[in-house]
Image (cartoon, rainbow, N blue to C red):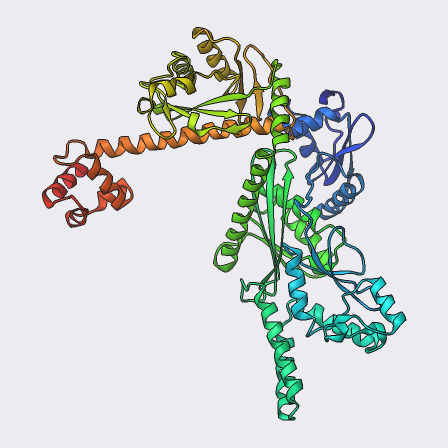
Length: 631
């Protein structure tokens, strides 16, 4: 592991100019590429104290052994050079927008003499126009099946095309009218290309002109008594309209935009983009990316633009408008760069209201759902769980993998309503029936509350803590033998939410309770560091580590469970204190009042007549409630 101070540039040698920089490892490989409006200001941030850096940045600067840079005249030039170097070197520490799956496109091979319509995946090729991406290949095939009667273009493979030309007989599609059969000379190459270009115009969103033209031709055929042709044109119109209905209309102003949203945690981000062309959602893509450095939404937008639109995809893939959740700092440079690639002006903005804002919220929900599904896939992977437990055992120097992990968290607001939670993971999976929650009496800080929780947890190993409560019911409501068996099972690892201070407090409580043979660690939120008792430096797990991912899940679950109990306690205390002493008002009627009005605030605003509408509340009781709330 290299010391960043050994290759830090001398003060004053880094220019205060726009430019692009590269970090290299001991073998000379480029491991990170970045751009900056001011190289001096940006590079100095990498050489701060290691503990202040993001875990990914820490790993990068300790892997690198040198840094170099190139100055440019403008920020747009820096953007272009950054994109070129990322494509050339493929640095391991840069954010990589790689699809979470291979999305199919509807491709038109315009570079061939007889263009072909087909489903295509993978890298994009020159001379091919793409529409999509689509969520499923069957969606493309259904759309094609509808449109081939209107645009009878070639869809066969080269071998089938050559074979038909040799024998002088078209395939079945040619016989049923879903292909114009250029293979046997029924149509010239120029006329076939005109059909294909009409198909591309329709798929690009220019549908109104096509529909109106077919309507005129149908009426003209009908007036000329060509009823068979009029009927065929009528069916063609129906097919076009069905194809148009498959693409939802979301914006009525012919909008050409991409709508982007992010859902993120400390280490990863889920990215979703909806492609809107002519006011219709033409396609959707999604990624789950590893975050380099401490990236916010604006930084993720920057990387999204340079990588997704930087590919050689053609002008049609760059929209006129990019709707994002947050503007990056270099938004002007990005807009200029996109405008150069498109050939016309491109704007980047945050939607504030109306249909575009509603669509952005829809994309945001999709990003959050994709993030949840990604985490669930990792959690349900048996191999990944086994690897996570092994990595934790190795990092903490445990003799065996921890089959039972207990995690503790404390929640309060300025020392009031102090509660603590205990969650249990067995074989890498949560066991909600084993969860416990604790109410801490009297004033206490986080360290004291953590020590008190662990003392009570291990006070009676055989019979369980009488103070703890399970997720579904209080501990005293369960049969004593059942509660004792479940609560007495010892963990192999205890995780506390916090850093060195919380770990030392927990270690003291375990020692006072005589607990031995149980590993202990703390997970600090800010830098995701793993702290061990008696150690001055934390253990740094790789940000892509399955072990770190499992520890995060355990910590987040304990935090969620503690917060939920704290809110319940606080709500109950506030309600009870306001309505205590009202004659004839017990728990059932208090619950009915809160259910009817929804909150104590709305209850305070109610009149006597409003209160009297609640079942079981008479006028006299309502007046007493008003008096109590007023006091």
